[in-house]
Length: 157
Image 1 (tube, one colour):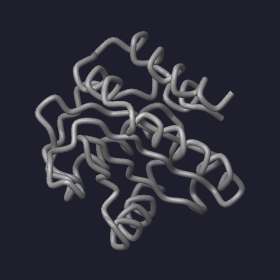
Image 2 (cartoon, one colour; image 1 turned 45 degrees about the horizontal axis):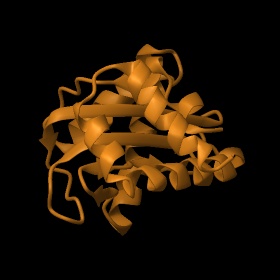
Image 3 (cartoon, rainbow, N blue to C red; image 1 turned 180 degrees about the vertical axis):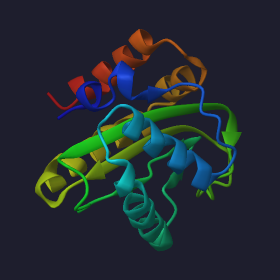
Image 4 (cartoon, rainbow, N blue to C red; image 1 turned 90 degrees about the vertical axis):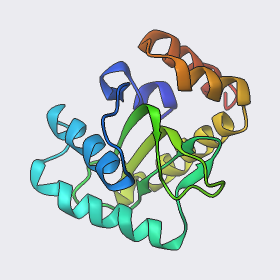
């Protein structure tokens, strides 16, 4: 699986309303529920898994980017994701202390652990590309965002 498949236009929240880390994660999970890709009853367990992962180290990886994620979620079938953008920025306990504007939620079942890792590598490619990050932080056009994701995916072809 690649970024374009995981973060399709229907998987995007381009005007995230949340103003803190917890609310951002909840809003992204609510989006998955609304899309029919996650059961409403699973949200609490997934939030707990994300929080447990955050206890190891912040998933706010710097340069305005956060990758909240959880592997081995029994309530997740395969790999799920949401790409979200906050124009104002969210305090996310990021490693560089900066606000987070771009969030890539990644959730996976045990069976999708390899896919999870592959997506994380692709997101890391975006993290290293300052031009793409700046563009993503200002773009609200899903087609243009998908093109940036496609370019990152091509580096793995």
